[in-house]
Image (cartoon, rainbow, N blue to C red):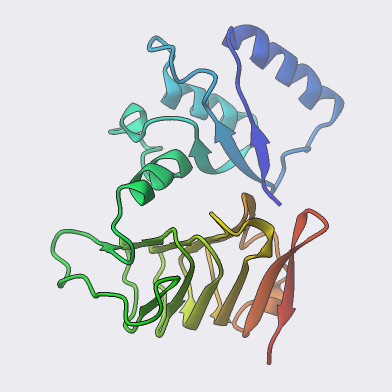
Length: 224
């Protein structure tokens, strides 16, 4: 499960308190995915968000995503490729139901071929593409490449190898599930609870799995 840190102003005092906590519990963040919620410092234009993330990384935090900030604040920095949950949600609100967001040179976007509360993608999802469907489930017939992203209001079904990132449950919450024919993902998330590849047992890698929420954490089970 990912940890969420919420830096607060003034940052000097916040980092001092954080350092005291880390001194008492050395290694607390070791090998744990961390989401940085920057909502409390976002409005302060004098705050260097990239430097703030650098400082978190220097303290042993493995940052996998940010939230609560505009993507523009990290543009041009080495952190701009982090998954930005706020930006994803804003993009989703602007997305026509069933639209596929892709890099500019991609082929025309496919239309949904299933019911209004589900989206079927009958082709691979390539690196750099984002599939965002807020209204229900997403089914992909094919692999999801490393660097690709699938975000759904409900559950996600991948009939192929899952190498990228998937975020389920934007609307359905804890009831959502993730299914894939072969697990090799970078990150999986249901209702805001994250795991990265380092967090789940290697016995699940390369196998057909189901992922669901159970007592506040992600539960993996094999389907083969």
